[in-house]
Length: 291
Image (cartoon, rainbow, N blue to C red):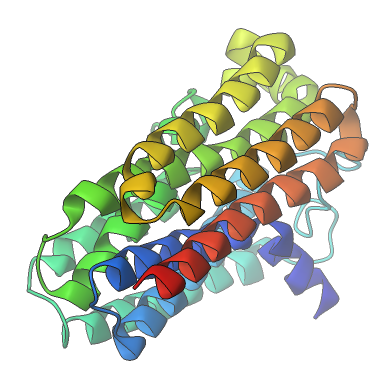
């Protein structure tokens, strides 16, 4: 059980939770909070990310991109703790559970949610699998911004509202969350740059180097807060305090990131994910007190 929990990469799961919480906050700002659709979105998001994490481990092993003793989190398949067949079955089993949760969302949404769900499931696999794995060609960052930011925030809000009213708030917030989610990937690729380069995996860190990606991490957080502040201050001045608090946490995490290497970056990755979750919780709290 411990090996499977490690394979879920619990330190990264706050990323999927944060996107849904931010979407709930946007719905509350519009006076449209609904418990059941919100919980379905949360359940779907967590399962989809776990499936993506499982798939990443399975397909990277299958393609010979992992090696024993890597700097990042322990890979159960590579280390021989979990069989490749078991990981493959777990990947598709978890995707099936996510799809079931997605079908229940149709009770609250329109039929066109089906192709959206299909795209999310395909992304969960295409990140590491297929003829052109996104994470192997410098496209992982763009995918994260879309599928961990724009999609969960806007569609969680939509499912509760039943319309696109208020998209002028949910869309900018979704982009902000996407940039913050991408920072988790930036730390991951920053840490694994040497291992990835050795096996021909072209992440943005491999393409642009650690120095550039360190500055990208800092700029990504500042840009996200600038975008969020442009819409949130109109809802309540309290949100500006949340922006300031996040920036302080972000700059502190950035300083830790650029002064560490290898496995010492694992806590920074977890810290980055928790910073995002903290921002989403602050959004949620602010939405409640301003509604």
